[in-house]
Amino acid sequence: MSRPYQRLLKPRQRFDKNISSPSRRSEPKRSKRCSLVRLPWAGLLAISACCWVGYRQLATHFSEPQAIFVLGGSPDREKFAADLALKYPDLPLWVSSGSPQEYSYWVFDQAGIDRQRVHLDYRAVDTLTNFTTLVDDLKNQGITSVYLVTSDYHMRRAQWIAEIIGSQRGVIFKTVPIPTDRSPEPILKALRDSGRAMVWLITGYTTESLQNLDPIEELIKSKL
Image: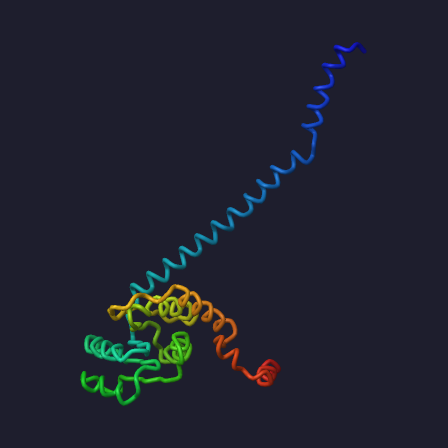
Protein backbone atom coordinates (compact mmCIF):
# COMPACT_ATOMS: atom_id res chain seq x y z
CA MET A 1 0.00 0.00 0.00
CA SER A 2 1.33 3.40 -0.94
CA ARG A 3 1.99 6.14 1.58
CA PRO A 4 -0.85 8.47 0.50
CA TYR A 5 -3.40 5.77 1.20
CA GLN A 6 -1.87 5.07 4.61
CA ARG A 7 -2.17 8.73 5.56
CA LEU A 8 -5.86 8.73 4.64
CA LEU A 9 -6.66 5.60 6.66
CA LYS A 10 -4.88 6.56 9.90
CA PRO A 11 -7.10 9.50 10.85
CA ARG A 12 -10.18 7.48 9.99
CA GLN A 13 -9.03 4.65 12.26
CA ARG A 14 -8.47 7.06 15.16
CA PHE A 15 -11.88 8.58 14.56
CA ASP A 16 -13.52 5.15 14.57
CA LYS A 17 -11.87 4.24 17.85
CA ASN A 18 -13.17 7.35 19.53
CA ILE A 19 -16.72 6.65 18.38
CA SER A 20 -16.71 3.05 19.51
CA SER A 21 -15.31 3.84 22.97
CA PRO A 22 -17.80 2.38 25.51
CA SER A 23 -16.86 4.86 28.24
CA ARG A 24 -17.77 7.91 26.18
CA ARG A 25 -21.10 6.48 25.11
CA SER A 26 -22.27 5.24 28.49
CA GLU A 27 -21.50 8.30 30.69
CA PRO A 28 -24.10 10.67 29.21
CA LYS A 29 -26.74 7.93 29.35
CA ARG A 30 -26.11 7.30 33.07
CA SER A 31 -26.46 10.97 33.96
CA LYS A 32 -29.68 11.23 31.96
CA ARG A 33 -31.14 8.16 33.65
CA CYS A 34 -30.29 9.49 37.11
CA SER A 35 -31.86 12.86 36.36
CA LEU A 36 -34.98 11.21 34.92
CA VAL A 37 -35.34 9.00 38.00
CA ARG A 38 -34.80 11.80 40.51
CA LEU A 39 -37.03 14.44 38.95
CA PRO A 40 -40.39 12.61 39.30
CA TRP A 41 -39.77 11.73 42.95
CA ALA A 42 -38.68 15.25 43.83
CA GLY A 43 -41.73 16.64 42.06
CA LEU A 44 -44.08 14.24 43.83
CA LEU A 45 -42.62 15.14 47.22
CA ALA A 46 -42.97 18.85 46.50
CA ILE A 47 -46.55 18.45 45.30
CA SER A 48 -47.44 16.31 48.32
CA ALA A 49 -45.96 18.87 50.71
CA CYS A 50 -47.85 21.72 49.04
CA CYS A 51 -51.10 19.75 49.13
CA TRP A 52 -50.65 18.93 52.82
CA VAL A 53 -49.90 22.53 53.76
CA GLY A 54 -52.88 23.71 51.73
CA TYR A 55 -55.15 21.16 53.34
CA ARG A 56 -54.07 22.17 56.85
CA GLN A 57 -54.60 25.84 56.07
CA LEU A 58 -58.09 25.20 54.74
CA ALA A 59 -58.96 23.00 57.71
CA THR A 60 -57.74 25.68 60.09
CA HIS A 61 -59.66 28.41 58.29
CA PHE A 62 -63.00 26.60 58.29
CA SER A 63 -62.77 24.92 61.70
CA GLU A 64 -64.82 26.25 64.61
CA PRO A 65 -62.75 26.32 67.84
CA GLN A 66 -64.27 24.48 70.76
CA ALA A 67 -61.93 25.78 73.47
CA ILE A 68 -59.31 28.40 74.33
CA PHE A 69 -55.83 26.99 74.93
CA VAL A 70 -53.42 29.29 76.78
CA LEU A 71 -49.68 28.70 77.07
CA GLY A 72 -48.24 29.86 80.38
CA GLY A 73 -45.23 32.09 80.71
CA SER A 74 -46.56 35.58 81.33
CA PRO A 75 -49.41 36.94 83.52
CA ASP A 76 -50.61 38.98 80.53
CA ARG A 77 -51.66 35.79 78.81
CA GLU A 78 -54.32 34.99 81.43
CA LYS A 79 -55.63 38.54 81.20
CA PHE A 80 -55.81 38.37 77.42
CA ALA A 81 -57.47 34.94 77.60
CA ALA A 82 -60.08 36.32 80.02
CA ASP A 83 -61.03 39.05 77.54
CA LEU A 84 -61.16 36.47 74.74
CA ALA A 85 -63.36 34.22 76.88
CA LEU A 86 -65.87 37.07 77.28
CA LYS A 87 -66.22 37.20 73.49
CA TYR A 88 -66.80 33.44 73.35
CA PRO A 89 -68.85 32.66 76.48
CA ASP A 90 -69.45 29.03 75.50
CA LEU A 91 -65.80 28.04 75.19
CA PRO A 92 -63.88 26.46 78.08
CA LEU A 93 -60.37 27.67 78.92
CA TRP A 94 -57.37 25.39 79.26
CA VAL A 95 -54.26 27.02 80.77
CA SER A 96 -51.01 25.05 80.62
CA SER A 97 -48.48 25.89 83.37
CA GLY A 98 -49.53 29.51 83.68
CA SER A 99 -49.45 31.82 86.68
CA PRO A 100 -49.99 30.44 90.20
CA GLN A 101 -53.48 29.07 90.79
CA GLU A 102 -54.56 31.90 93.12
CA TYR A 103 -53.60 34.59 90.64
CA SER A 104 -55.13 32.80 87.66
CA TYR A 105 -58.46 32.30 89.40
CA TRP A 106 -58.36 35.95 90.58
CA VAL A 107 -57.91 37.17 86.97
CA PHE A 108 -60.81 35.07 85.71
CA ASP A 109 -62.99 35.96 88.69
CA GLN A 110 -62.39 39.66 88.05
CA ALA A 111 -63.48 39.19 84.44
CA GLY A 112 -66.61 37.33 85.53
CA ILE A 113 -65.52 33.99 84.07
CA ASP A 114 -67.17 31.00 85.73
CA ARG A 115 -64.53 28.78 87.33
CA GLN A 116 -66.20 25.72 85.86
CA ARG A 117 -65.00 26.92 82.47
CA VAL A 118 -61.37 27.14 83.63
CA HIS A 119 -58.98 24.14 83.55
CA LEU A 120 -55.57 24.80 85.07
CA ASP A 121 -52.81 22.29 84.41
CA TYR A 122 -49.24 22.53 85.75
CA ARG A 123 -47.56 19.45 84.30
CA ALA A 124 -45.74 21.27 81.48
CA VAL A 125 -42.19 22.50 81.98
CA ASP A 126 -41.63 24.11 78.56
CA THR A 127 -43.36 24.92 75.27
CA LEU A 128 -43.22 21.38 73.94
CA THR A 129 -44.77 19.86 77.05
CA ASN A 130 -47.47 22.53 76.98
CA PHE A 131 -48.82 20.50 74.08
CA THR A 132 -47.76 16.95 74.91
CA THR A 133 -49.35 17.03 78.39
CA LEU A 134 -52.75 18.28 77.22
CA VAL A 135 -53.33 17.35 73.58
CA ASP A 136 -54.69 13.90 74.47
CA ASP A 137 -56.89 15.37 77.21
CA LEU A 138 -58.37 17.77 74.68
CA LYS A 139 -58.96 14.94 72.21
CA ASN A 140 -60.59 12.78 74.88
CA GLN A 141 -62.98 15.65 75.62
CA GLY A 142 -64.01 15.65 71.97
CA ILE A 143 -62.16 18.92 71.29
CA THR A 144 -60.58 18.95 67.84
CA SER A 145 -60.08 22.69 67.32
CA VAL A 146 -58.88 25.37 69.75
CA TYR A 147 -57.73 28.97 69.88
CA LEU A 148 -54.00 28.98 70.65
CA VAL A 149 -53.13 31.97 72.86
CA THR A 150 -49.57 33.08 73.56
CA SER A 151 -47.34 36.14 73.14
CA ASP A 152 -46.51 37.19 69.57
CA TYR A 153 -42.75 36.72 70.04
CA HIS A 154 -43.41 33.15 71.18
CA MET A 155 -46.04 32.24 68.59
CA ARG A 156 -43.79 30.94 65.80
CA ARG A 157 -42.26 28.25 67.99
CA ALA A 158 -45.64 27.36 69.50
CA GLN A 159 -47.30 27.20 66.08
CA TRP A 160 -44.67 24.88 64.62
CA ILE A 161 -44.98 22.50 67.55
CA ALA A 162 -48.77 22.71 67.41
CA GLU A 163 -48.76 21.84 63.71
CA ILE A 164 -46.59 18.76 64.23
CA ILE A 165 -48.44 17.40 67.26
CA GLY A 166 -51.90 18.58 66.23
CA SER A 167 -51.73 17.03 62.77
CA GLN A 168 -50.88 13.64 64.29
CA ARG A 169 -53.50 13.86 67.05
CA GLY A 170 -56.23 15.41 64.92
CA VAL A 171 -56.38 18.75 66.76
CA ILE A 172 -56.33 22.10 64.92
CA PHE A 173 -54.80 25.16 66.57
CA LYS A 174 -55.93 28.62 65.41
CA THR A 175 -53.36 31.16 66.54
CA VAL A 176 -54.29 34.26 68.54
CA PRO A 177 -51.02 36.15 69.23
CA ILE A 178 -50.85 38.69 72.05
CA PRO A 179 -49.17 41.92 70.86
CA THR A 180 -45.95 42.84 72.69
CA ASP A 181 -42.90 45.04 72.14
CA ARG A 182 -40.48 42.11 72.12
CA SER A 183 -38.67 40.79 69.07
CA PRO A 184 -39.53 37.30 67.79
CA GLU A 185 -37.56 34.42 69.22
CA PRO A 186 -34.62 33.08 67.18
CA ILE A 187 -35.71 30.63 64.52
CA LEU A 188 -33.25 28.07 65.92
CA LYS A 189 -35.49 27.70 68.97
CA ALA A 190 -38.43 26.84 66.75
CA LEU A 191 -36.34 24.34 64.77
CA ARG A 192 -34.98 22.74 67.95
CA ASP A 193 -38.39 22.26 69.56
CA SER A 194 -39.90 21.08 66.27
CA GLY A 195 -37.28 18.34 66.23
CA ARG A 196 -38.12 17.48 69.84
CA ALA A 197 -41.78 17.26 68.84
CA MET A 198 -40.90 14.73 66.14
CA VAL A 199 -38.96 12.69 68.69
CA TRP A 200 -42.01 12.73 70.98
CA LEU A 201 -44.25 11.46 68.17
CA ILE A 202 -41.89 8.55 67.46
CA THR A 203 -40.84 7.57 70.99
CA GLY A 204 -43.47 9.07 73.29
CA TYR A 205 -40.75 10.91 75.18
CA THR A 206 -39.37 14.42 75.05
CA THR A 207 -35.61 14.70 74.77
CA GLU A 208 -35.40 15.85 78.40
CA SER A 209 -37.39 12.88 79.65
CA LEU A 210 -35.18 10.53 77.64
CA GLN A 211 -32.09 11.99 79.31
CA ASN A 212 -33.60 11.63 82.78
CA LEU A 213 -34.95 8.11 82.25
CA ASP A 214 -33.41 5.52 84.57
CA PRO A 215 -31.53 2.90 82.45
CA ILE A 216 -33.03 0.07 84.54
CA GLU A 217 -36.52 1.47 84.14
CA GLU A 218 -35.94 1.84 80.41
CA LEU A 219 -34.84 -1.79 80.20
CA ILE A 220 -37.92 -2.97 82.08
CA LYS A 221 -40.22 -0.95 79.84
CA SER A 222 -38.58 -2.36 76.72
CA LYS A 223 -39.27 -5.93 77.97
CA LEU A 224 -42.96 -5.30 78.65
